[in-house]
Image (tube, rainbow, N blue to C red; front, top):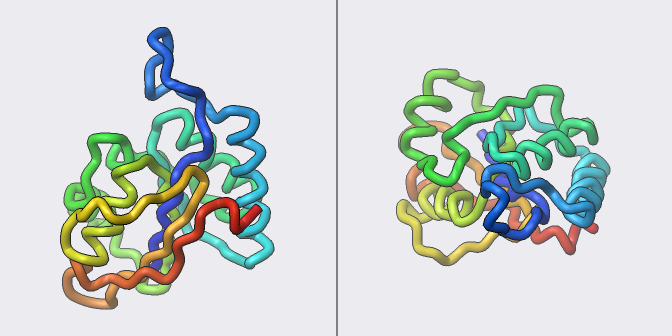
Length: 164
């Protein structure tokens, strides 16, 4: 299975009058995310499902990916919110679905969660070493059997500037 961890695009700044979960993509964030999505389409990438954090900026990013034709399936999951963790997601969401090995899942979320998830898959623990830029993407191949913790393989780490 391939996981594509995608950070949301550039969002509104933190403001005391605006709840963090309601922050939207800025016009620049929307434009850059659309360009990244178009480039991914040109690279003939397609996801079986895009799973997104329900926070507005992540959901808007996922909608842009859907509109570009990168998938026809979109689902929101609290597991990809700030307090989500990979162990719970794995046990409660991924494992019960029993996806085939050739599945490509895009997970749209936030930092530092996505980088921590990647580090756990790659090294077995979060080391605070990876950083996923806004509208950036990381690809991780999960092993065909056994635990994925510390046994997965990164095959893609792209900041958005290389896709624009």
